Image (tube, rainbow, N blue to C red; front, side, top):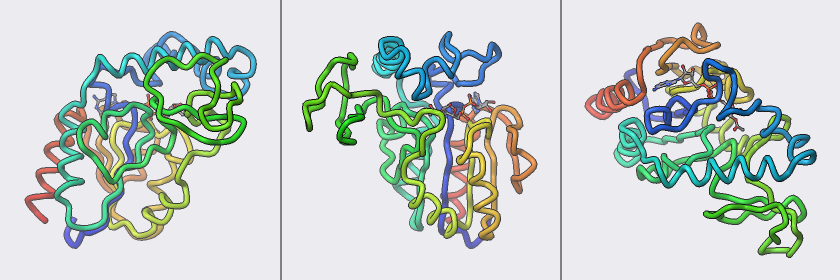
Length: 234
Ligand code: OAD
């Protein structure tokens, strides 16, 4: 990976697994005891707002019990020390990247610690529980929902991400199963623009064969090793 200046890193649930946050596609196929379509779609929110809000309230409350792991810390170090362009794009809705100190970071699937008003489109930082009847601080309508990109909704920051991918010399995917688009297609976009590609994951992902190099193991071990390689070389 000589001549690497611009790096785009995609992270997924596997990055936070060693912090004690459950991944989505575990052995039972359930996410924290629920089918994804019962808690992560606009239809679910319309049908049973109490359930969806309670579900995300529990996930938000859990953040106080977990901490960044060695992989988050290593990526924050790379962010601080890498002299070229760098962008961490996370599919995770937890706040562990920022608590580890990462700055060049985008949450493409939203954030647990944010509430989105379905009436005015404003979003606000949110720490506590979010009952469906609570009023939007901006417009006063009781239309706040978890600021999570549900299935069928457009992920955030896509233009910035596409530009970064087209300028990338290296694309690295960490702890994601490659099952959800558009994130699963980033490796192809990056390759198309001439980037080298590396996957760090516990198991081979759906798109493993698309990567130039694949390293298998826990993120808490693989990521600090890779970051040390990059910074030694740089
Ligand atoms: P998944 O649960 O689909 O995949 C997690 C991946 O992490 C799997 O490939 C595991 O093998 C791997 N993994 C598990 N433990 C690991 C560890 N310690 N180190 C490294 N890898 C490990 O999660 P995502 O790919 O992130 O969307 O899921 C993508 C999206 O699907 C999520 O962002 C979510 C969900 O619907 C929203 O919430 C909007």
